[in-house]
Length: 192
Picture 1 (cartoon, rainbow, N blue to C red):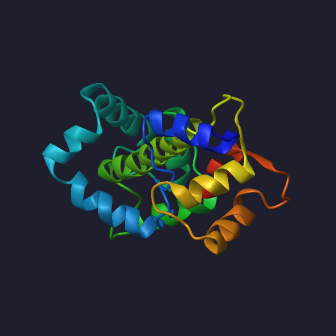
Picture 2 (picture 1 turned 135 degrees about the vertical axis):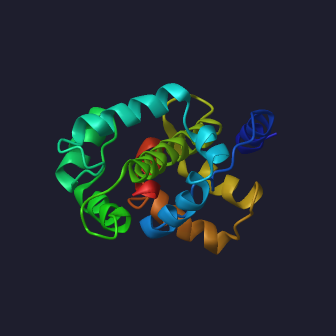
């Protein structure tokens, strides 16, 4: 049994995690539509947030709603999200804010905050899933995966790439053809 076959057999014994989890990244507008449909149902809302999280977000919203009109503006939203540990790129947050702003253009309401937080939680979950998927094939626990080994996995496990597809994907994974890649960088690249 050669080294690659040994590695493949070890991977098959580990918990199966799909390397395709979280791909492709979904546009903000689609995320919002999806979240709105789920979020406005009480049953679904309770599944997304614990009582403590719900209380924390509502209290923070009230703190940042300085004029008490049950809306916050863009700057207040940035401050609020930072205070509860969620950082968005300004352009992404701006796009989301425009989507969620009330019909009068006066800001966003508390339910919109939950949509934004849900989106960020989902991204963090997706990042964790991808990291776990890569860890499952990082047999030496170094944070790196050998490119040739990964290419072979692409062609032999799960959705099987043909050689041309695998070569094309490897250009994304290991663009400098260094023979190995740091998978945390790839996760960030995938989620970008």
